[in-house]
Length: 126
Image (tube, rainbow, N blue to C red; front, side):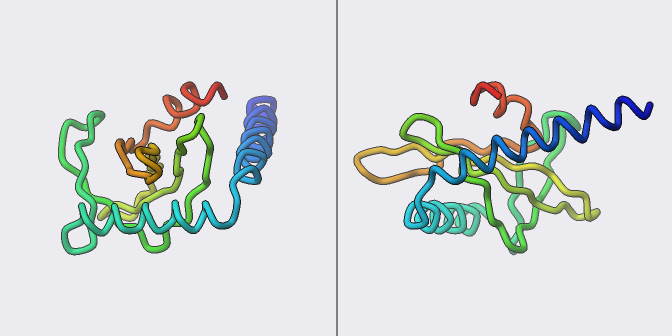
């Protein structure tokens, strides 16, 4: 059991360092642009401050609140994953990944994934 704990800690450190390295590749100007894009997207699709999404694990509609969404910015080619989290009505945290794609010089969020970080990692080759 102790070994599993240490392995988990080591993997978390590796992931944080890998994620930080990716985030360092993103300019401050781009981070501001992507942050604004994500905030506007959340605002546009939210009702009373809550983003509704289809939870394929529970087969129901759930809602998430974003109090201060400061994502991790992960480049994917010329596009980006914006990795953040939201809180549901019961106070549980859920990992949320927005995919921003560049089209005609402008970025647009084209996909949102909730509690599916493993798939995001696979796409990124992590």
